[in-house]
Length: 386
Image: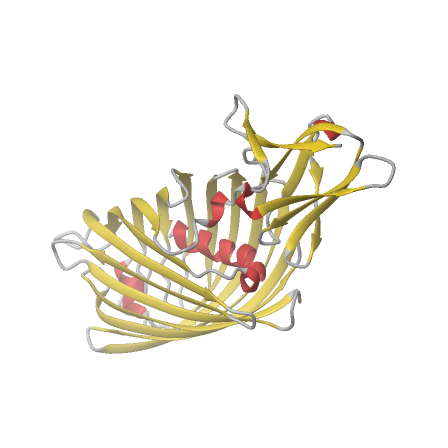
């Protein structure tokens, strides 16, 4: 599912600065899904089912670690239903260290006619190396699934890398999966009953994300090939869009194919979803990083003029820029200093306007300055240098 792929990328991009975020996050999602799975039809063919989606996400950062928990429920009027939950802890090796380790566990209970009824449990560990412009990771996952009283186990190892190029984020990864879950692939029409496995699979995935201001567009491509136990290949495309409506609400739409995930017990499905995300905790949605996190300070200079210092408290994976009369409104990058992006500018006596923006979003005034709005949905702060 594209939201799973996108979430993986966003966690890689966002977590390095999570320890500096003092406020917890609490988000809810509710929406609609149209799912088409092999084996759902009365004669074992394809059919489409409508379902309701519910999800909750909670993150609690501290100075030493960050706790993530999430759960989701897919429910339809027939037997198509699934509930999943995951909890993970992220540990930076040291303050401002590029190295971070994630460990976690997840569980699911499902009743999917196309893949039997039962449940799944899995645990994972992942090591990240993250810089301001890119990073890499490697990890391993082990899991077990029961379907209609039959037990199967699975494991996976993956490595990948990501990079940021202005408003474009890209990641590439390769995974090796081992599983004995024959029913999962038989239902999808990929193996015959006389091919009991075990199976060895190789997945390659590319994810691209465009982030412009408060909105983002994500697309993924996955290529799967068997290495042992069977002979089949698959390709899957998926996409998602997030439109930020307010600081507390966003619309999320997804469409595409989810390949069977034996480690987490998820069946193959073609799906379309539409959901509303609400942030009910003390922290607004992260893609609306506005100038409320920016402050400006002017220090007088002997002989006239002053030194302008602008500090922006934001995660270090954002592209933060400053501009104003002093630069002819040409965007200037800001330097990372600890938990802040900082700019130092010498100004002569006079009146100036200054604005900051993240990920090429609208210009915003630092929160401690008088605001002047423009005709393009942005604003700037007013500074008077005596």
